[in-house]
Image (tube, rainbow, N blue to C red; front, side, top):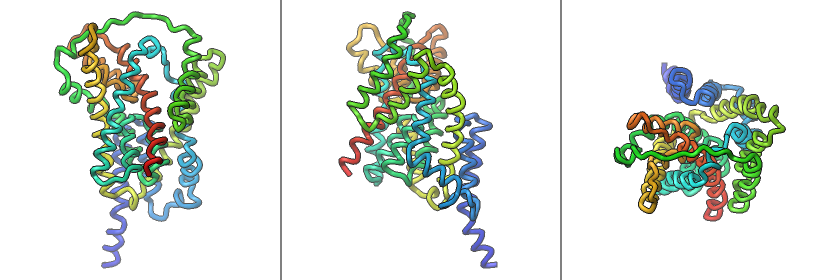
Length: 368
């Protein structure tokens, strides 16, 4: 009897992980929260927590994939090629001013870093946790892998979970920090065509500038811009479609199930995991606050006012955040359309998050 009870107690952590995995799969299927990633992550967690599982370990297929794809940063940067091929930077090029919001909305990264340090995490761990605020899963994975490998699993789960919860997280924060009058502000939008040569030069110039400012961001920004160049050059349509579909789908499957395989009970079921999940929420909230307050600050000096909600779209959760902003604006005034400006800010957040991740990778090791 005693041996039976001991066996039950020993299996309890695995059972808890099965429940967590089940919740992730339920969120993916029933709630449709980031299903392309949460479902593979959940199933990977099941495979990793089956007692004596041969899916993990020195010869386990998932461990081999982790060593080959996550440790080497291969999977995340390949995802960036796919994302770059999907993104149209046209709206941002029409409204380059919106790039400031992509920078302002990264405030949550650094605010969360400070909170994490106050809670007892060391600088590399705090930086890895803070990058959840980038609202960019691949960037979160790369930074965590470099600075705090043991935290990759909870950071990844938090990043993708909160990205899917943007429609729930952002509206109450936006309403708390804006007035109804501010939310009713209309913004004029003039339809202009961006020359093809500008769209082709943009990824090349951005790669050069980002590389000179933050060399550690080259693999991230460079692969994102390479994917975009494939899209915009006009002579590689087949490769562009392959990057957007086959490459994106295949790497997403491998990335998700591999990250899930790191959610082993003995490493995942710790107090730090709960703190990381909580701090991830803090990061997203402060991102939203930072973007909104920056827009309100600019309005002190601008004759033509900006709808402060645009600032909240500066996070990297594209295009979800832009849609959330437009939905709020439409509820306040059904005839107010700020989707074009929201998308511009949202696209700039894609760049801002990657550059922020590169800066963290460049600066944090100097203080270690």
